[in-house]
Image (cartoon, rainbow, N blue to C red; front, top):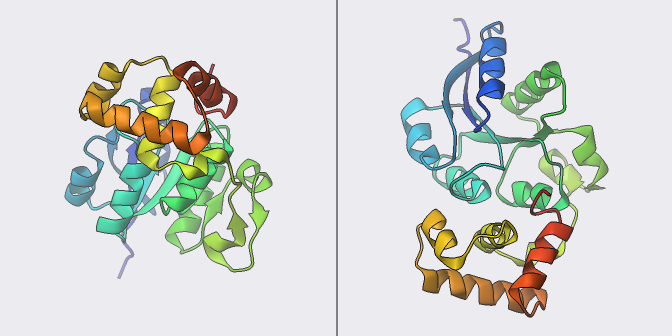
Amino acid sequence: MKKQPARILCVDDHRFLIEGLRARFELETDLEFVGALSSADNLLSEARRLSPDIVLLDIEMPGPDPFEAADDLRRILPDVRVIVLSAYVRDHYISAAVRAGAWGYLSKDEETDVIIDGIRRVIGGDFAFSPRVQERCQPGKKGGRDRLVPPSTKLDALTPREQEVLRLIGRGKTRAQIAEILCRSPKTIDGHRESIMEKLGIRDRAELVRFSIREGLVEV
């Protein structure tokens, strides 16, 4: 019996990248493009509907925190394997991806052949990390994902939601804007901000903005 192609769902707000990947997958007999989302808003419901084997997930998009969405996907649909595909190779992103259960972290700077190879490795049960990602990690003692220990950063003390709030603060969003973006009350956002400041030992909003830029949480 002929093996069915692996089903790929792309979550990225860059239309040209999506179209390029779609065109390439059409040339591969073992890969099938089944859909695209411009944010992680409906990732879980679309994953249930489309039954992908692989989700290619960007991490710089409008909408909910992608790492939180990846973690939800891992817990609720454990057969779906997430590969982060990002233009940014940052220590806190790598750490968050590993914590969220991602099977790979690939750079958008890679040639398409490298991305395709990474997808196939994950389908085969291995983990796929770009060389740039591996350079920032320490070797582990076990196989699989544990062969790499992600770099530790001060951001590791924050929950995924707190990291998202900090990222939005770094982008200059007000508490009301953050509350609207995350569909939470301003009071809840205040609670997150106070927790962030306590964990990081930071005293005011201006210092939070500087910290988020310094740690690479916000691109400038």
